[in-house]
Image 1 (tube, rainbow, N blue to C red):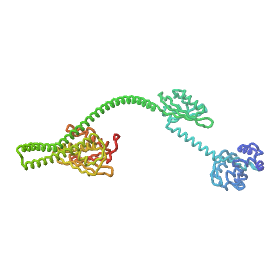
Image 2: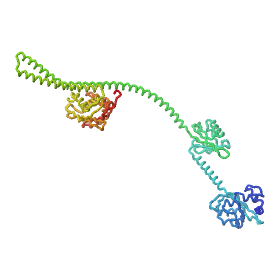
Image 3: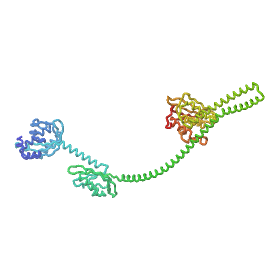
Image 4: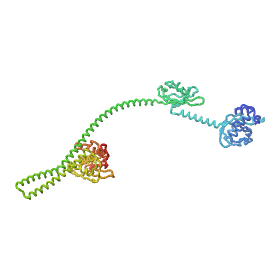
Length: 565
């Protein structure tokens, strides 16, 4: 390569040295081949390559020995051959061409960007007979530049079109020169032609200039982010509450400060209104709470009064039931006792007559007649007194059950029969018939007193609300086992039925359709409480107006234990 230093003129060597950033002429040959740039020397007349360096081999993919001695047009290197022809024309005219951006194709077909510098040289006395091509690969730097340009364009577009008022300022002049976007001018009312590039201090937008100095001071100290709310002045002099957020970016030698300005005046006004409203609401709540407390106390007193009235009515119901029981007992005992008393009176008269015969003498037939009559009277008296004794025993059992609520083992059919016996004084006033369809083998361990009260109340309810005294009809009491542990008891009548609108209310306390006509409104309420409470069951009702009603009671054969048991 010593030939290069001989054939190349000194100015060209200096030019190449300058391009290759080396100022030592004696090292030109070594630098020529060591240079990462592509350097080619070609003959101007026929474009034949006479020398190529190692940089050419690396950047083009061709070996130097394959291209030396051949015209450049033999290789598909130039993407646009017309551009090379244009460079040659300029070279012939000016003797040198600098910094032409071109695209060259490597041997593998990939295309790279190059910065091309060319100069004419004289060889062997032939003036300007050769050209030296220095090509530097700028693909990566061009891509980086394009990316940066695209990023800057995107930032400029986002900045300009952002709906949020923004500005940015460069730290080169202490953030004095400020560029504002369209949204800022629209919100603050300034003329872009007059206000652009001026700082917020110059535009007098800061009501408190120290806030601006605080932001600049934080940026100068290296704080990358800041946020504050402050009062700012629009072009028309009106004041707005503004949330100012800043972000500091590295932008080459000097930092770039980007700020956003969000008008929060309405938000602050809304917040103040909400605080005022909350205070008013709190005051109203306190007043309403006091009012409700007073109403609650009044309701509590009313509830206590109603509870006392309910207790009194329940007591009245119990007394009425007791009166009904007494009436039933009196009615049932009246017949056998009356019969016994009549026979005993007749016997007394017969004894007196028989005593008179003793004084005048008697015949055998008189004695036999007296004995027969006495025996018959004794039988009648014994039979009626026995019946009275049975009735008293039954009434005693019912009375004990209803007053003590003791738990015991009993047959359901017997319990129903005993309770119906006490209701004869009431049922005999009605034309309807009561039928019992209960198997004798259904045994329960429960509370006969409360269960008897349930039956009594259901039958009384059917009579009072379902029938007139002379109305024909029937009340059927049925029971059947459900599985091994439950019994389904039903009281069904063929009376008037219950209005659909009243069905969901009949178990409510004090609800009655016969107020003042013998109904207290507590009978079915008591039934509901007893069934769901001490008996541990549930009760339902079904009815259609004019089709009668049926109360279905599902009870456990063994009632749940109570604490007092």
